[in-house]
Length: 294
Image (cartoon, rainbow, N blue to C red; front, top):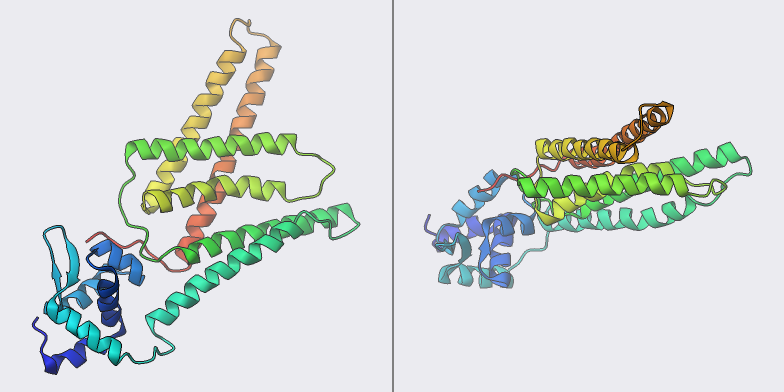
């Protein structure tokens, strides 16, 4: 599509196309996924449409990176000189509101976390209930704040490589094991929603590492991590049982050890799921979908 003076107004009146020209003018050549992330466009079809409408204002090199043509740079200069004020529904306003909301939720999670460890009643059961409730609220603020802060176009659909899958599963199973150890060693006389944080944080941290490190987001891949982490715990637990009972004859002592090991593994297995599923559910609840690769 060739852009002339007559069609330039029609091209530049759209705020998304103006933002595409702006980011290319400011940052130079960008890959498709970089534009998708910077503009927080949720669907590739929408971006493809606007790139096509820009016509010969932009160009694509052999590496698949987009940049402005000479005509595009002139159009960008014209746009800067006659830039209209953003309306209430503009993408820039939505970007500020979305990120700002995420930061606000993250800030609110700090006092909520601190209050969860302060007895709010002289009655111990009531104080414990308040602490548990504040713990749940803290995790919700942390999860939703993180999700709102993440760029909408950051996560791309695709499979997790086998080595990464083992790494994520090992991370979550390791964090879960540490959670169980902390839970067993915590002082019993201190109020606090330990169970909420220790159940939710391993899965939340694993999901966040997946999102930030490999930018992979498919529900099936998340489930794979959970299943492999479960396998890690059970295989590791059975190896631990074999080590503890090596050389022992079949007697009540070995049966007792086996029962304790199986019970511990079962508890840790339950700990694997709530955090990562809660984060995954929150991600989908806010309506953000992982964009497909071009």
